[in-house]
Length: 84
Image 1 (cartoon, rainbow, N blue to C red):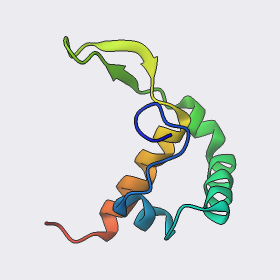
Image 2: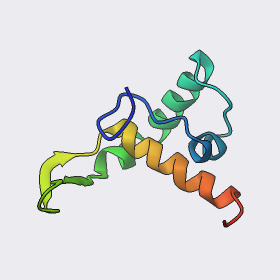
Image 3: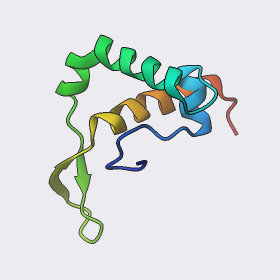
Image 4: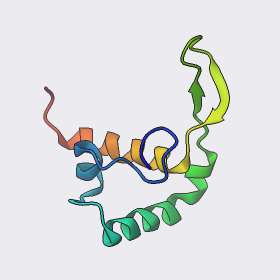
């Protein structure tokens, strides 16, 4: 379910910090859903192509909406983390 073509964001340290959540569960899925609904237009406008592993060129496949949300949470979590 996780990863580039995942259905839900990765619940890594930065994502959970960014969204202010602790564990994967029903409540946090609703929180992510509400974030999605509040930002749906911007999320749909965001098109980030994947890269071909061998050539490094862009493909016709794009990151999923879940991956976009994951990236937002990750970046927000980085803002709260001390630089290592």
